[in-house]
Length: 535
Image (cartoon, rainbow, N blue to C red):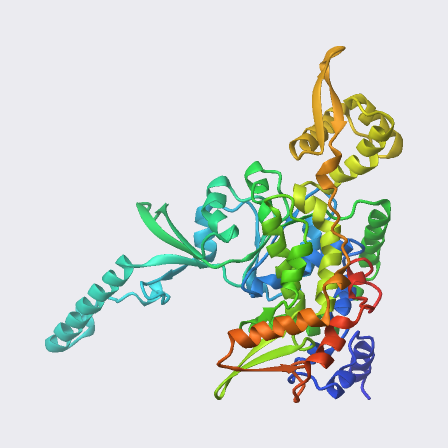
């Protein structure tokens, strides 16, 4: 065996994936063996953990948000928090696994930059216009025969007329379908307002006009069409107009602990000492390939959530934004099911000789997503950075237990006595103002000192508990009732159930329920807490 072969063997032997075993499991198709690996997701996070230490919640939410780009309802993710805590680093590392043509890493984006960088000139039929194919006027000296020259000139005039008409009806198309937009810095205000209907999912297509200069310096008006819903991640939300969009997505703050900082420094040291350890490896190629196959197949499948109605009845719904949050949680469940599309039960609708296949979200998908939602719920509902919620729970609430009516100075002293990173009264006052805005605190003038305010905690704000028992609605009768409804709605079709996409035989309702919904020992919800342990 040559040295090259020996090195390659050792390299593959260190892989997270046993390809021989996956082939024996009935790999979906050649080149897509990972689809049948029951620990695919946790292995994905384990590989990601090579370059991103800790930050478990942020890694999970970043990965699921990027995957959602290839579904019908892409997600928005807002990474909030102080500088240098890993907001940009997390999402940049996750996005490396995705087709790079789909990942747009954006700084301060202007309208012109959006058009020039990503716009394609198309005609009224949405066919791309190649400006290099503009008709060229014939030169008389190139034709010895006068008749030939006249004929070519006639053809040129007809082509030129067609070309001009085609340009008159042209527009610049910016297609965001299946794209992942990483806003490393907030876009400028005009661009944000142009994109907002798309980012809010209010419209799938919007149009506007910009004034731009031609190559000769003349001003011209360009018609721009923005189409499609992308998955968006905002790494900076300091601008107020960006914060206003936060109700249309999840808000997460990367971990801020000495343990995380220590692990990050150790990683930096390892990269400096052993750079080869972090090069693109065999597993990276496998995972990147799986993401691409995931992208190419999602158009073939629609996800059904059999217990969605029961989940809706249990979902905390005290405030208006709960309606949006519930939709986003359902999207997370769908993304989880789609990621495991070969390992989830299948409902087949047969109409004569045609089949339509649906993926059923399983108990694992519910458990996993609700475990994540419990971790990000408060920052999402309040759009608050994690450090402010830490301040509220570890300082404000502790003070309020001893002193019902307290002052800013009390909070400053409590924070600085508990944490190494000291804060000024000005910084604490900004946090207090934010907590007052979201209804966690109230303040009134101090009668003994008009320069200060008396503060009180509003305890009722977050009293509803999300940690309900999922087993309460995973009942066999409910599942049969859902399937009966499906059969009634699709009465002109034949409805079949299969254990998964690689199964050749139909399965019974009882067997499918036992395997995918009855199991109460699901461990997948622990992924978000401890991704380095393979499940």
